[in-house]
Image 1: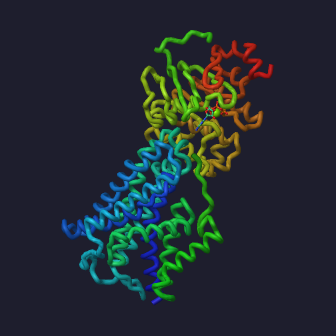
Image 2 (image 1 turned 90 degrees about the vertical axis):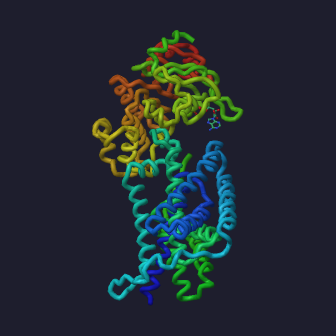
Image 3 (image 1 turned 180 degrees about the vertical axis):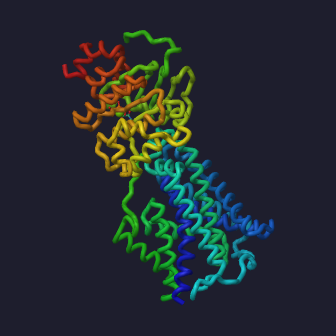
Length: 293
Length: 241
Ligand SMILES: Nc1ncnc2c1ncn2[C@@H]1O[C@H](COP(=O)(O)OP(=O)(O)OP(=O)(O)O)[C@@H](O)[C@H]1O
Ligand SMILES: [Mg+2]
């Protein structure tokens, strides 16, 4: 029973972390709070749904294609909204407001195109069998969700920590100006980051859609709040910390449902967020980070 | 204005009637400047004269209002910053723009970002042994002088044809400043073309071949550095008479 809850916590937490990772990439590298990330998350889930049900693609093909679709959407938001604001040297509030607008647009669009009712992925997507490890047995679906999130996160962290591209991205995160003076194509990497972050957001949407067996035009907003909470819990900007924040949030929710009741789930996790902010403004796992122009 | 402008062919960098403004503030007003291959040119002037703005415009981080920048005879006014670095126009920005959250080694590796293949950092470690000792520390933990050496070593790894330095002596102790200037002299003697921005006018003029004196966005004087050191106007304004 407890083992099962731990498995649930890790599974949910790893998807939160995946969502938060995309969000924190944009924040760390572009220096922008992108409030359309929840919208991209939601449309990613719908894209996969269409590819699975209308085009009849297998899951392993629908997932990357839907991620690319979500990525292109993120790229469009960067090229059409964020880039314009960057060029103008607009203050921080402007991209926040502009991306709220984009999120509202995406929600309405989804309502118009797909209707407001909750949709589901086909039930036969994953076998009903369980993977058993000693005394613990994990449903294949949950194992796949966790596995995919972890693979994507580890890949991102590896790129950021160990590759030349990652070095360049970390340079931009500290100072776009200094990075440009080193010959790093900053604008191009802003586009790339927007694409990758959105693709991760889309993947999270698909996995949450599978996990809760529900897709709706309104699934983005609560997820956005959770993503922000995860990042604050984990410590802003540091990718690893955002991952820990996501896992922590997932665990809090699962155990809130288990030991209290599902009504208190969000109250507990966001209540905890308040306490963390009072006690450790830099987050549970974070060191205070700064960014210069 | 003394020295006649050199013919364009010899010029590595030629700046033609450049004007730069921040909103309504004109920071650079109609300047013309040349740097020839192998020269060390100093650009001196008081706070707010427009020196950094000039370098930032040359690096492509600030867009000029009007005027042209010619690089090896080619108009690069609309090139992006990274294209200019690839072309060999490299700047060490004011306040040692090192990346404090990256290690010393990572900073150096990024200096070679525009270069193909694995960078060879050994020559930089030989020139600045302290950087080898600190290779795996965060660059933010270096002292001011060490940071300036890191910035310099990193810039050299981009294989510059013209190295632009914005106040490399800023905030450093006199002994360290002497070291930095000695290194600049050495790099220059080995053939590097340098555009040096300095408020440390005396030392800059002693080091450079030619100099421009900048006042509120324009060049008030220019000519061979040796002559400017003795110019009564320079002495009165910058060398404490
Ligand atoms: N980003 C900016 N926005 C608005 N005005 C600016 C900006 N940067 C510089 N200025 C103004 O432009 C003028 C020239 O500044 P600049 O930094 O180029 O001078 P400087 O010669 O490098 O001075 P210092 O020796 O103090 O570094 C100043 O009046 C300055 O206030
Ligand atoms: Mg300056």
